[in-house]
Amino acid sequence: MLAAVVLAACILPDRGIIIVDENVQNKHPVRFVEPTPLTPEALDTCLSLDEVKPNEVCQPGDAATVLPHFLDPTKLDYNFCSCDIDSEEDSIKLPAVTLYVEDRANDVNKGLDDIFAALMLDLRPDEQDPSRKVLYQSYVDPTVALKPTTAIEYEPPRRPDTGRELRQLNLGLPSDDRADQIDLCNGAGLPLSLGYHTLRVIVSDAPWFNPTEDEQTREIGVPDLANGATYDTLEYVFHCDDKSDPENKHCVDQCKPRGEQQ
Figure 1 (cartoon, rainbow, N blue to C red):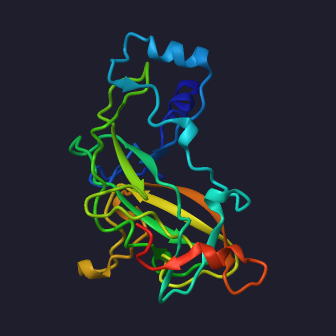
Figure 2 (figure 1 turned 180 degrees about the horizontal axis):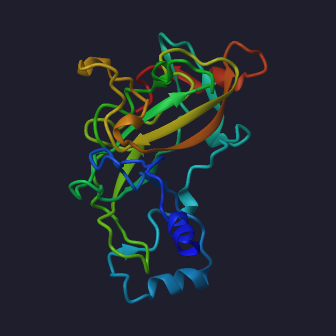
């Protein structure tokens, strides 16, 4: 009798079993890889490891050139102005920077996914249509996949090779036929209001969400989570001075005729 009770206690019910669809499974999410400062001792140790080849580094990029997440308007490089949209642009633009995105081979065919990026302005948590906030598309095309970088190989020491690949997103750097630095306060299609604004950079490892079979209806900036997409974001806070405000006299000189700044 006791043996029967013990045996019954070991029988597991078949309720609550979840079947994973291998066609949409994605165990390895896409992620931004930001350089972090290393002490000289740590850097020496990293570069001396046997696994690190001469053309590889312990992290992508130079930590000294990382764009801060708060673009302090008291510093000249980030003292942006809103100008006359029809005829002017800000002569101070977002400093050129490269963002690195890491992805690993997917679980289905062991291939590498395309990575798509978009820039979003002042996205609020209660926004019903996030795709309306995707701006600056003349600088970053959210419908074109990022290209793999050939200038740098990134293989973290003492981690097994899992087919990871590094992509780079250029902000204000030449990319194909684009070479313009981003005019944060004027490049969104209208001069931004006086005050602080938030720029969100989002990357996803699948084309954006498509609610219908029509490719034209893709909701740019909305990850297609139902089909296994993953995503990552970075946010930057910046400030715009208003040229029409008498307290912002520097904007009178800083706002230049459009096309004059090369």
